[in-house]
Length: 350
Image (tube, rainbow, N blue to C red; front, side, top):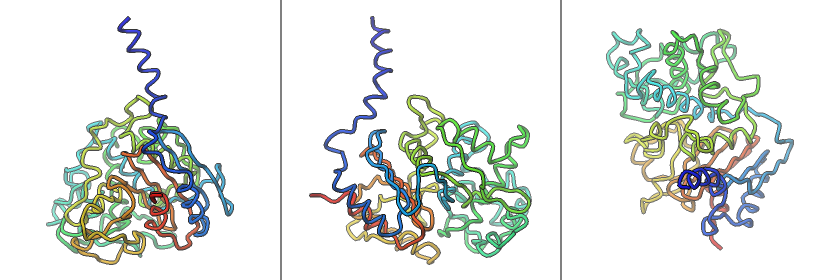
């Protein structure tokens, strides 16, 4: 009898997970207001999920459920998930030096001490590499990334850059070499396929065939919603841990260099500061802000402090709020879009 009760509990647990508490439910009027703002700013898609249930799904300006787009820097979040999986498998440690696999760095002071975590948190101290890595028809972006000069002490400052994540791709490529798995196949087999995500063809690559891990993926809004749910549930798909929940420990903690940025995810925890003010995330990337300036900023003064965000240029977003069991995906066409205004409408109190 006790065993039967346990089995029944397992069966109804997913159903309970799909029942958002009424006190936490986002009002339909708020969703409509946020949707209207998104469309005004060229929004292509909007999906709002709460408690695992789709509360709103709409498309405009040519967007469609089956239309994948380049999700830009949301690719970085996928890369980070691949590294969490690799860490859980014992292929690497996030705090190990990158020079353990990129052996060219071993004789280079400073660079030999950069860790995988510092690449993921964009605090490596390396030059950004924007112009060379994103040059038209670049032949081997990984070779360029490995050769990037050190311009600051590792861990001392935040520099949002493609070089960090192309080094993640190169590091992962070298790690599982003995298993003959390339980084994109690893990401697909260990992380994306288990959650039912199958990236569209057209993943951006350089001429050598290396996939861009900073901004190369093409996904549908529904794909991104699945990724958001995966993150909200700390690596679980239904009851099955694809990535052990413990692998997410520390992922949503900011750094001293940028309290608003964790392991690839933007954070709203700084809203707890009395002097925190909303900023345009896209508008401040590359602005060379100090740690103090980041600490006095937040994504939204209206959103809960546990909101985390996947941010891609052009208005591509996935907001995740664990305390509200909420995942929101928004695709846009590059028109002006404000996280603060969208989230103000979504979380406005009557």
